[in-house]
Structure formats: structure tokens, C-alpha cells
Length: 419
Image (cartoon, rainbow, N blue to C red):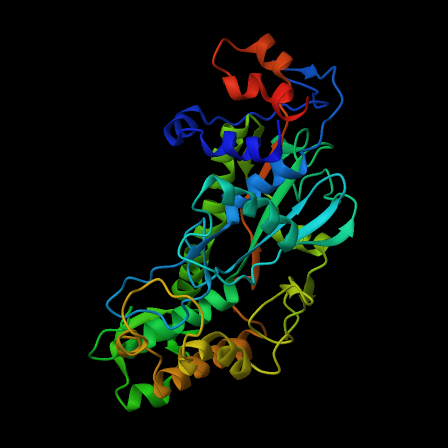
């Protein structure tokens, strides 16, 4: 089949068939399960995913789908950032998709501007998915990412099957630092009309230090913050994690459903110790001031960098970088999804207030100065979920399971995709 025919085949797979047929299928060509009741060694050699298979998985998980609508009473001022195939917590998302296969370690460049409301509208445009994959995939180094096959960083039950030859392992890494800055601003500034009530912003206190104000004394005194609306810092930091962890979870689930459509095996798993894996990828690990035991993974230089020092000269500069786009309110020059005039749209746009920005900076500086790192109680970058895809060994499933353990797409996969 031609690439266009393969794209059409994937596009035509029914959603509810994928939802109800989805299973974790961990045993791939060339794999060996060395113990237990399903002990088995594959008689086949591993077959790596093809370019179009990886492109479809990337396109399903973290693709660029077109202009976001921003159909809100208070629309956002950054409309040309491409909508994604996963729900994002800010324009473009807080997550970078890394992946590794037998050939190398890669990252997907997410700096993409949408060209129209729906990037792929017709069958003829489906080749855009493959073109985008080729254009946005950036090779970081040759060879499969070397993840130690031990506990930790892996879970014991994944030692036999995770990151094996022939597989592609997708690692969506999320930026908790930017998520935390954004959330703090929304908690303290009523002008953003999110989590801060009109009567005064939330009073963020450091519950790890006697519930003292987290650098906000001035704003409490002036009434910008409501002293009675107390919010512990540890909860804010956890909320930043919960908030942003939704992105990699959705990316992996999208890919999981796509494996069903393509007839591939794989599964979504976790249990990695994030810090050690990020070290292996090449992330910069910054030691906390005061000699804390664990360092803070703050980013991969020039690729995916956290919103804190050393990638910014100060926390003030980091906060400006995160929150300045809403402040600038630039006039839109490219395509937009709405029919109204630019002036009508801009009239409803909200931006952080000067006091809200100053208060956000005070809290973030308090965290950085108090804990010697940002965030204070969690890592700036985190790897929570991973998704592996591989070609299943149907002999294994025929031996141990009854009919229905894999579907027609799996049965026909090698003849269709690798004739």
C-alpha cells in the first residue's frame, strides 16, 4: 500500500472500536518473558516501527490540529498557536514529546503556528501529518536511549519488556515550573477571572514554615489579597503538578488508541524515577542551595528549558517570559478562527494586572529564595507517563489466549504495513 493508502486506512478506523478493543499488549516480536505462567521466548526477530507508523502515533498523541477556538467570555490573546490533538493547559501546551527507537533519541519541535482552523480537512491533506513529523522531529543523538534495566529507575514488572529493541518509547516531559507560575498568577489576581475572587486574591502561605505569608505581606496589607482565603503553598505546587500531568496522560492515551487502529502492540506505563531518566536524556540537574539531597531537573539546553534560573537571569525574568505574552496583546496578523473584527475580539481579552504581576513575582521569588530551587517542593521538569509501541508476536497470543486477544488490524498488520 502507498503512504496515502496507509494514512486513509488509519483515518477510517472507528473510534469506538479502538476504545473497546484497546488492551495492553506487551509481548512483541523478539521479546522474552523469562518467568511466570506466560513464560515465553519469541521465535521472531524484532521489527522496528516504520516512519509512517511513528508519524501516525506522534500525530495522534501530540499532533498540530489547527487554530484553537478560544470561545470564552474572556478570550486569550494568543490565537495563532496551534491547537493540539491533546487538551493543553496553556497555548501549545506545557509538554515536550521525546521518543527513542533503535536509531536514536528525538524530540518534537512544538513551535508551530496554525495555518487554518483545521489543518487536515480532506483526504488529500492527510500527508501533512507525515510532512509535519519530518519537519518537527529533531534528532538529539544516535542510538537508543540507555535506560538502566534495573529497579530503580524501572518498575520490576517492566524490566523484561520496556524499551526493548524494535520498540519505540515515547516520553512526554512536562514543565511544572511554567504551570506553577501561571497558577499562582491566577490564584492571586482577580483581573484574570480564574481562581481569584473579585473581593481579593488567595492568600498563599508557606505551610512548611509555620503558615507564614509566602512573600505577600505588602499585598495583604493593601487588601489586594484576602487574608481569610488561605491557600497552602504545598497545595499550590501539587495542583501545578496535577494540572500539567493531564497533558502527558492524554498524549499517551491518544497514542494507545492509535496503536489499536494501526494494529500495533504496546502499553502506557509509569514507575520510572523521573530524575534518573531525565539525566540519561541529558537534562541539566541543578543542586539546590542549602545542600538538599536531590537536584532539580531544569531542562535540556536549547531544547526544553524550565521557567527559572539558570535559564533566566532571575525569577522576575522567568515570570515575564511566561506572562508577558498576555501583557503585550499584539495585534493578530495571521489567520484567526472567528468572524468578528480584531477590535471586537480584543475588547474581551483579559490580561494580568500590574499588581497581579508584582504579587506573582514576590511569591515566586519567595519560593526560590526559601528553598533554593523553583518549584520548592517538586521538580521543575517531570516525566510521569510513557507509552511504548511495538509489533506484537501473534504466536504468543495464540498460544496463551483465546480469540479476541488481538484484533483484525493486528492480524493483518505485517502483511499490510510491512509486505
